[in-house]
Length: 398
Image 1 (cartoon, rainbow, N blue to C red):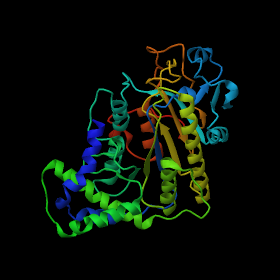
Image 2: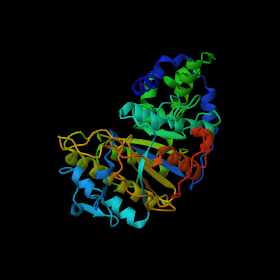
Image 3: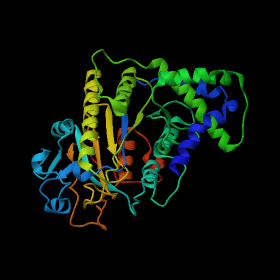
Image 4: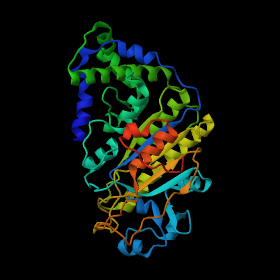
């Protein structure tokens, strides 16, 4: 289903070019850029199912070492966080942030009746719904509509070539792009702006209405962002690869102080069925370097207390290792938070209980929608109950 949704959104532009109307651009351009100090959320999705136990390591738990004889990380091969917990050695910026109080760890996050399918579990996280509930909108798409009142402006930007379900609303959605200036040039070659100027058709088909709204707001958003993007100072360095490039782009957009509250990014490759140690070393090294460079730039901008980075994965891994020196799809995992504006850092709850498993999986202790509710209400100032459809208890790290 996720692939179909992405294909639908990607193909909508060409399918509905003749239906564009210019009023969406007027709505967009009428919005005012907020002053510095507004809260910004950066959502970083570790796609594939990150193994939380080898990220935040229970270094004094015998069951951890018994169930993972060749995958477990020895205490001396971790960076110390507390007497009970260490962190992977490729994450020194994380450890430093933890000790400074600018990183928080929430363990055993998940949802009832977990699903081990990548696509289905991502749908659950993107929608913010029950595992058996199927909605057509995402939690950030509903956030956009709750704040935007139907107008099309880039409240949420995804650094991607396709738009996640998380960003889809009924009448307005977030926009996705990798390079706004390159995207603007593509739209010029395609002639999208001429189409907008020359076509004034109203269309009453619901699906077509949504598609041309999506395309019109995308054109408006790309033009605005491309025109306002600021280059980072000379000497600013980010690691190579997709994640480093995307974090650099987000940092430059924050420096430009554009009208965006949420950025959505992805680092893929966490489906570690085999040779997990080598894969984690490579991915974590890049992840650590990217976030370190990102927060260094934010501090130079004076924005480190205004930005919250939330790192999550669609599920954790099974507690016992497999025969290929890896781990298979599991259930609950951890969510990490980074900001100079945290009210509480460190370990927010107990480490996972490895003696009380659900068919070999960690039992969830914190519903992920409590995380969403807390971030929506306490960080973004949104109506979390309307967006999520019911009340959830707030957490105390914000």
